[in-house]
Image 1 (cartoon, rainbow, N blue to C red):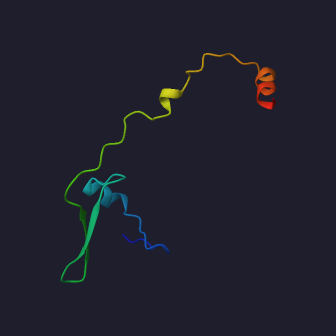
Image 2 (cartoon, helix red, strand yellow):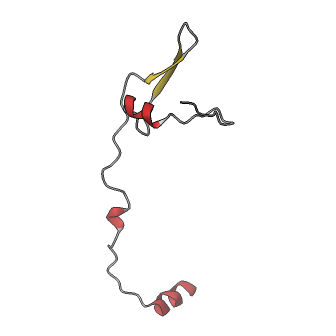
Length: 80
């Protein structure tokens, strides 16, 4: 597996590696170089990231409007 380094010094961790380490967005990782010169990637120790909300924050706003606007009335209101 290989990947390219971006101009910002970033790399994409291959999915197979992310799955093996159970890395999800927000998971902290550590990099180390061993005596052989190999780079080692591991989960950072310490606090685990908070789990993302199970429900999208915009879902609660969906379908809550009770006012029925006619397009002409709404446009007149917005233009005034």
